[in-house]
Length: 57
Length: 450
Ligand code: SF4
Ligand code: SF4
Image (cartoon, rainbow over all chains, first blue to last red; front, side):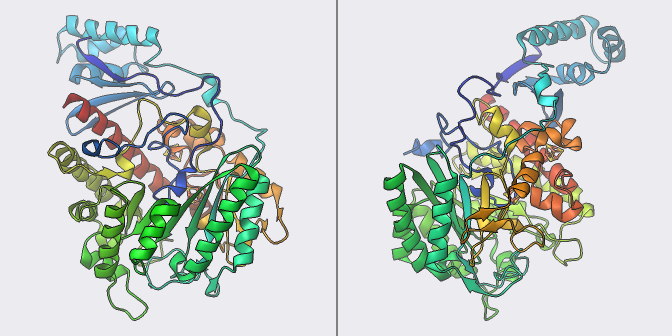
């Protein structure tokens, strides 16, 4: 496409096997004042983003 | 629903219901922004003065293709249907207020400089054990249990912290659970030994440092009134290094006195921290440090300033991560998590030194919100149900908000404090949340483009 470039496909996972609830409680992680989940990963696959130079060592 | 926006000259579109993100050229942006309100013909007419008709038609074709793919203007009715019969379920996370006392006297402390509007108290070991027992008993089949040692400053009761961790490890074996212990501290009282202990036992450490020395010292004096920055900063740096720059956060607070807080974020990055979080203070409007609506334009501008510098630094080898500029566009949590949010009062609770249970750390001490006791093991299920019902799908304001699957409906403690209604999000928080999310999405776009 010339005018629109998709940089992320559908990521809202509604499929079977979701909702296990093993992920972190959102407010606990860093801020203690917000319920954002934007920066959270799924316990079953996600990796937190660290400095790529450290290659998640 | 589609949200289009422009961040630092980059045009973007978020397809809310699918989570797909698209980068647009200017014409693409103009067309997509108009799509829901106007017909194709109307769009062509409206833009024909600025763009060639053939080009506009071309964009319309691209939009139609993406709609067919389900990545633009997708609609999932279930995301707009209020959920009424929600059952609270298990409890999986706990904030243990092991010390309602502190070695600092931070002026903006929501815990009233550590005492939480009550007496200065330390949690006895037995109360802590009862709290962990309760968590295990109420966690059902959940394997991972989270416990944050909180205060005041939990280091004032560090002996009990260590004993509770040891107790938790016993419970793990007995009940096939896995505790993720974390600690939130002002770093003032840390030493080599405690840092080493954290590395062994704490899956995350949150260190409170506000950024620039003068900003930090003005807000975070010691009991004697002297500055705490030198010592807190030195210790926090040691923790970050000892943890190989992972599994920790240095967390600052900004107030009316440092509305140029982008400089504090950058000061923390300059000090060598790679995991940074700086949060708006939450205080009632009559506090001299409170953020008011009139400060909002300046605050949003600070995020823009930070955005530019952030993208630049990450590209030139000075990589760091700012908590609110992170978003996982490829995966992220599942829909259930995206809708349930912080889980305060439902799957997450806070426990005071004398064993009282509150919906979360921010609710501690608020009249009418004590929901039980770890001593008796009783929890008022009606309060849990009330919090479960304050679900993003049940909040009127969130129904039309594009950020809902990332924000999850706002902080209940703010909603209660500002509107005395768990279903009415606090406006200032909404505006900041949306701005930060735009920045986070734009960071990803910028880094993909290289
Ligand atoms: S930003 Fe505000 S309106 Fe939007 S989802 Fe969050 S709390 Fe609701
Ligand atoms: S109500 Fe607010 S402070 Fe409490 S856990 Fe939720 S987001 Fe955090």
